[in-house]
Image (spheres, rainbow, N blue to C red):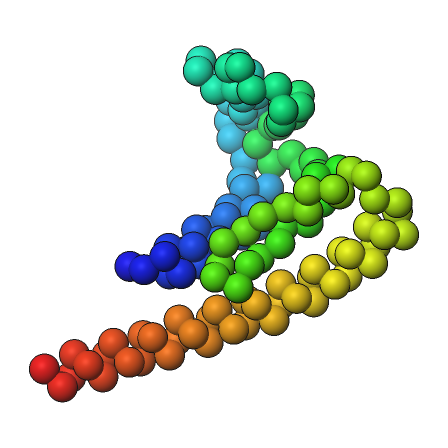
Length: 127
């Protein structure tokens, strides 16, 4: 599996998790997920990320303060580094541009993966 395929698999798995996890329910008392600072070895010595946000299974939290996820042409992702310094109007404009560009890039990545899969199947048949 090449880097592009791995990136897409990760991206789609993350999207599926985001869609399915809020619908899932755990037994009473088991729905709290420990925050990162409570997990040994996680977050030690790294305060740059800010405070951890406690979540319960099925609970929704807005993460508007970190900005949208940007999908690169190669399928990797990143965030807008200066999102917290933008005005609300700048955020709205950037968000719309990023969403439109992400749609195009996801379509291109899917098309490229489909083409690679077809080429791989054809090369197997030639053997």
